[in-house]
Image 1 (cartoon, rainbow, N blue to C red):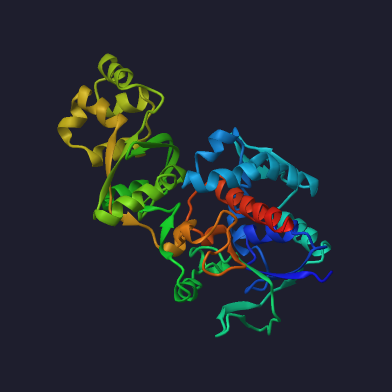
Image 2: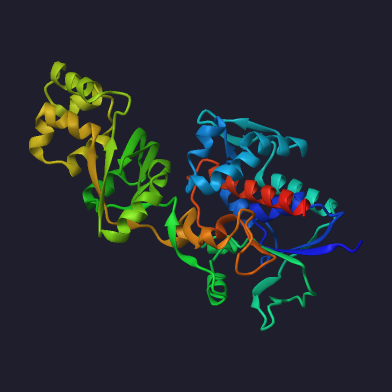
Length: 396
């Protein structure tokens, strides 16, 4: 029986998992990547430590994804435990850090992990074509590439990524071609990114680059715990990244939004107030440093974001420490974001990622309009999509 031909366009995590899992006894598979190597964003993401997934119970893991109705069945088909087992089968050992983030063991550099996955793909007979850029569709609907005159293909899978970190190849340039085919592609927005705060120059001179550890942020009823870093733009760090989708939503209708910073999330308002009132020290700054263990950056934020009367009143100051109001004026540049919001609207695809308007054509990964915070959730989501689509096609 003649094999059907599948063309995968893109060389990121979702595409690599798909290529690694497709049944090559049934399909002739070609993966096309416009850069000289596959997995460029995978490697860039690994520069600070390759966070592969997050170690948590499945129900807790799934709650981090949006929209839940779309991502829930995908993650259940290929869970964090499944992904770790898949890596172990390749000989890639992993460990969970103190924050429950999962990394390769120290002897496994990001490039080694990528090479192991690519080796599996090649051993299965998948053809990998680099320096092969997809340009769009020809008049009759055939694929058009730069550097390759492709023959007819039976199935096309797009995995072209979002629109951040252009140097890795994910520039969102595919959006125009899809819009011309009548596909609803939502505008891209920065996600998992820094946000702008109008710090005073005096504050920045003293505190730029300084961290705020063990804090919590609140916005629209959502709470994100973790760390922040003071930047020239405003705020960076996993706590604000986790709220990026909601913040961008708010900034669509308002020129600025207010988030609330809890500098002592493990203490109640009453406990903070009691510490302030019962202190034997007289200077407020000394009380904050020695009795509440706030560092100079945390104290400076309280001073910048409140008035003098609040700072000198224990009741008001306790409330401020538990809920420092910080005005957000905007998000960082799209290309500096870790990931993006927007992409192909989810109602454009069926339950198996097939585009309803272009039968035989699928889209997976960050091309689609879904969101996950940092911490391994993004990679998990992409690898889960690749695995789920491979299983579906293998049964057709």
